[in-house]
Image (tube, rainbow, N blue to C red; front, side, top):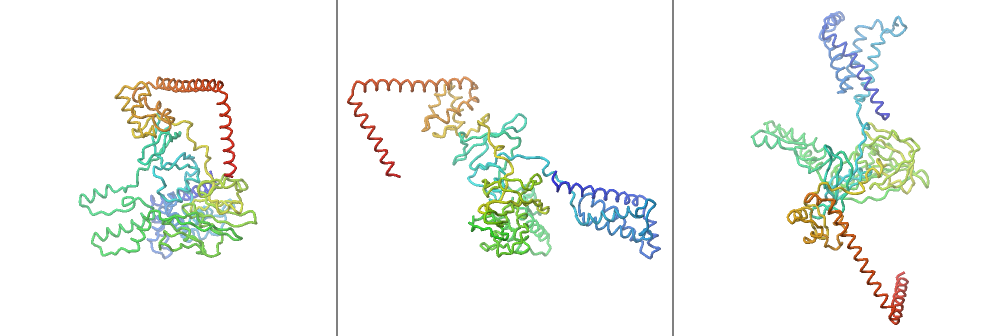
Length: 571
């Protein structure tokens, strides 16, 4: 476990310990009542109803602390409760020692100190399973020619070491009772798989996104039955979480207005919602940053998206959006020279697209980069593979320092890099390239009918299988009737692919392999024999005609001289 996990575990034990021990006192008072406490308060001139506050301090507050809900409030209530205990019951023992030499009120004191600590650190101590299970992502494929989400998120995936295949779709998912393999292939302009580009990976999980359609079935049913209804969040549109939160406020006020209450919806909310739902905008080129003697931020976000955490967390307000569209779609820029190097912008950026750089000397520089995974195993002084925005290796950089920002659940790593590389480095490779390599040969246990086998002639699996079934094909050469293998490549691609999928039609895969082998070997042998016979005959004829041999030497010698002169002139 990481050091932060140990911290959380310790705080969890403290919360549970205080909550359970104090709750037992509260349950006892629920069972026996607080009549004795009402009498005690009356003797001190206090109203009796104050006694019932003990249920808040010794029942409600411990439950909040145990559950980790409003934990700071629960801790504060316990502190107030213990002050009443000291003042009403134990004031005469405040400076006394017990028989064992300890403070007479050590139990109450421990409750008090633990409650103060919990009130300070809040709901920490909720132990998450982060890092317990290792997930290896082998491949990301997108059927379109570009990533349609935010570029910073795609860049982040690539820097993790996950290859992204564009113009690529899933051909098949296979396994015996569970997912074991996936085969992907590039597609043509009509989105038909090109089998000669297929790759097969051993996997146990496949995540499929089939479109971002709103989940508004219940809303549509409600409207159809005449109910008053509004929608927000994923029921309205699949967008960023911040858009859903603003949309929820608007939906709530809209519903109140529909119920006849005189409310007005702030148009600024409507405008903000539309901005937050915006699709990625233009790509803006940034001017290069030169590292200097003081810290400077480097921004790797060059696509207009609704995002501005870096501007809100900067303590000197030195990061501002440069007005272009007049909204949070504008890109952030560093204004001035007042960067304190606090790294808040580095840790807060959800796209991991901000770094800090500072020159050490003429050769070396420091760079601080974000890291979302567990950096506990990285020892200071080790060398890490530093990557650029596109996941390309830049250099092996020395780790100078690391710091965990719990608020953002992000590490900030300080690396020593060459000065000329400092502004390029923004990531560290998470998984090795070797784990994402496909199997040596693709597998085609199942193929869609529209998958293209013969790319030259655009012949699909369905066309071939139908022809085999209808014509009882026994010889692969019969497929030339439908132009299979008759294209410009001379069947170099489809001759290898054919035996891997014709079995659904005939089932004699071994015979077809043997037949294909005999045909290919026979054709090759025939061609070689013909070339040998033709060459021998030509040699004998030339041997009988010396003048031809003389002209042959002159022609080929002249050709070689001409090639040499042309090469010299081209240089």
